[in-house]
Image 1 (tube, rainbow, N blue to C red):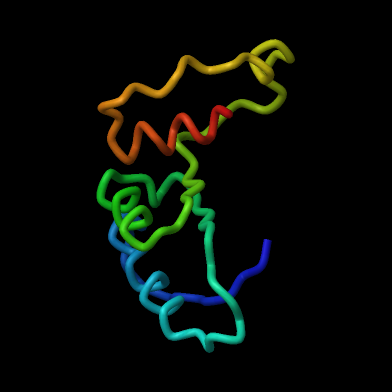
Image 2 (cartoon, rainbow, N blue to C red):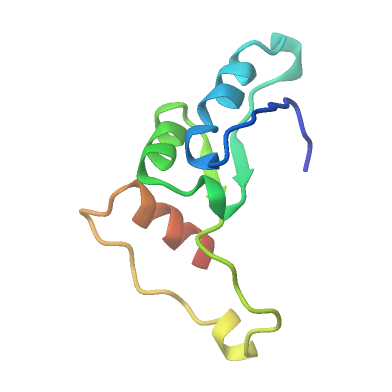
Length: 99
């Protein structure tokens, strides 16, 4: 993981705080290359943020919820059902995290 931008706020809810760092990414010098993925904790999970990542051509990895440590081994390697054709941005994100 490489942190390429930071953002500080006093807002108590992270759901509205993904757009400022995405705007900061656009300000980075071209020689840094292109950011293709973004990682965030579950405080940032919302349909708006998932769509915002898609609009900015970023593959998002936003935690869906808090998970227990050490899930059963068979649960970890179980193939998820296929993604439906009418899946929204959050459904796509959840499916990505299971694969």
